[in-house]
Length: 174
Image (tube, rainbow, N blue to C red; front, side, top):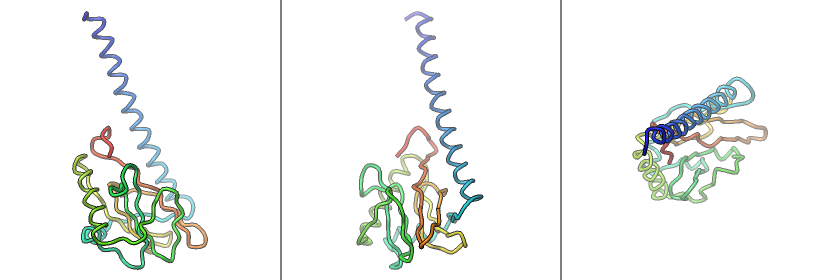
């Protein structure tokens, strides 16, 4: 291979890498803008870090006043996020799937599978309280990100947007 062909191939590879970097930056900027606007406008709740959420789920426990939901992409036993919503509220979502009768073993399996995947990406899992627009706890959040959008709607309805997944290696998604 001559110098011209080699240089052309390197330019194509560099262009592909630059495109992926710019795409990752754009997606991150849009995510942060969405979260920032959610805080400023409308009837929005928020997430607040809470290590006891992580401890609770690691033990396979869920408060009986909570309905458990998971967000999966590939496999049902390997969620990308787990939330619990107070039974006095109604979750409005087409992405979160209710877990009708969660057992401690099932919850521990979810958590262990999530930990295995985050270990591979060198990221971690966060437990958070889900707060309504008044600052009252209405549920919990467990995912590899502690940023999210929570919309509080009429008639005790709540919309919890699915996690924006990230890792320390942005090109390796789980």
